[in-house]
Each structure stands twice: as structure tokens, then as C-alpha cells.
Image 1 (tube, rainbow, N blue to C red):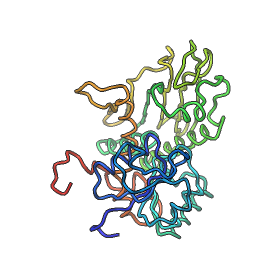
Image 2: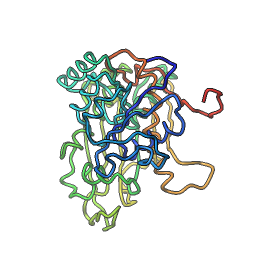
Image 3: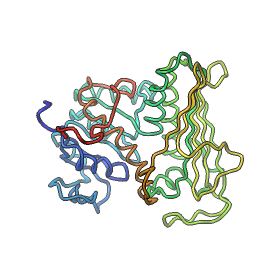
Image 4: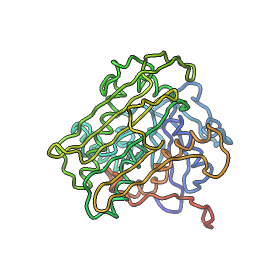
Length: 362
């Protein structure tokens, strides 16, 4: 790849996050050329990717056929499905395509050995690189703590709390089929289904990521989940959530050393606008607290705007953009990285490519 031609990219999945990746490339990234798109629904099969995201036709049609994607000449695949498939990812890497994903692989060192060796072998065969970075787990539980830690002399404890109500999030496949909101509370456990087990694994790996990069040397990661019932019946995107079924989930991932919690991720997720009285009450969004020398706290909350009127839909979309752009902005760095795993700790600082948009080269 030379610097005189655009980076050729394939979009894998065009849901909420994938669509924001595509629109960013079409609207702002003249250094990137979309050459293909993998979709999952027959309704999108054969449709121009520009049309799928509400833009002008690009001449590139989406496909449900993985073989067609593997046959394309591309530098990188933006891999953004709700549910990952290791066979697909290895096939992409073996075909010589780099992969950047918000879906998984935030700390390859701590994934099961068999999976790590498969991915490593695929990278070696294709001379390719894979990078994972989402929001949480991802950038807010990886890059942000590392950046803030640069102002620390010593760290005693690191905590990230996330508080979010999912009521307006349209990805109901994840909310109901994956997270099991609306199910009996006793059914919802960290390993109750494949998605919950996968989510648990990601946060456990992220806890180890901070331990390994910040010298915590933890002994273990403990996982707890409290599911709380809805006090009323309500509808959400056509789904009926019955009173008494799961409307809140409090997850805690605690990394211990000698029985003391050094690293903790806490997520406080609800639907229906209810919030249990006995739960902690951080601000909506993400609050990162470092106790140490010195102690520091920062809060992150994405909105469409803090200065103008915006719709609820715009505000919800802002969250999707934050997930998508951390990965899209990393594309050149991933392509320039040596073959193998490129973690959030390995890549240089990822910043906005467009920024204010005033540079002549844009």
C-alpha cells in the first residue's frame, strides 16, 4: 500500500455502528475507498451501500456472500457485527486483509489459547493485523485510563462506572435476545446464554488489560450480576416487558490482588426509565475514578450537542458515533502496524482525522 492511493476498506455489517462507519467514510474520509460490504439481511443484499445508509449510490453493492468479500482486493475490513464469528475473522486475516473491530479482541493476551493461536496463525499467513477497540469495553476502559494514568505517580485503585438506560436504543436483538431484558430475573446470569457469556469474557479480558498494562498484577477477576425486576408493564420497540421481569442489570467486574479490589468495572444498565433505589447513583454516562497520588476523576457523556436543541434520536446516534469513530480513525495506524495483534496499548494515540475540517488536504 502506498500513500498516493486511498485505503481500500470493506464494511462488515451495516447496523447502527456499521452505518456510522460508512457515512463517516463517504462524507469525510477521502483517503478511504469503500470497495465492499457484507450484510446479513436479504433486504440489503445487492443494494448499493450508499443507499443503505441514506447517501447517494456509490456503485458498490452489499452482499450476503462471504466468499465474495474474501475475493475482494482490500486493505482492511471494518468488522462490526453484533455477534462475532472466529471462522470469518480468521478467513479475512488469511486472505491478507487487516481487521479493525469494535466487537471483540481488546486484549488478545488473555483470550483462550486456542483462539489466540488461530488468530495469530491467520495473521502470519496473510501478513495481516487485527485491532479491537469499542467504547466500553474498549476506549473508555482502555485508552482513557492509560491516558489519565500518565498524570499519576502511583495508583491504588481504578474504577469505571457506566450508567445507561437502553430504552431508546433500537438494537433490540441485543437488548432482548442477547442481554435478556424482559426475561425472569432468576434466568439472567453472566453465562445464561452465548451473548452474556461473550460479554462477560470481554469485560474480564478488559480488566486484565489494565492490570497487565498498569502493573497491577491481579490474582483474579470476580464477576457478579444483579438483575432487578420492572415495577410495571411497558412496551419497547414492539416488545412487551411484563412487570416483574428484568428491567435492570448491575454488573461488577473486580480485579483482586491479595483479596483487595484494585480494578473495577461497574455497569448500571436499565430499560423503561426505572432505577433501583439501592443502586449507586453516578452521573449518566461513564465516570472514571483513580485513587492514588494524585486521585483523579473524569466523566464522559456523548450527546448530539451541548449547545443546540437536538432530538432524542440524535442523542442516541451520538453514542453510536463514538463507538464507530474510535475504530475508523484507527484505520491508517492498523494498516501501518506490523502483522499480528495491535492493541489499544500498541497503537499510537488515535485522534480525529477530520477534526475542525479546515486543513487544505481535506
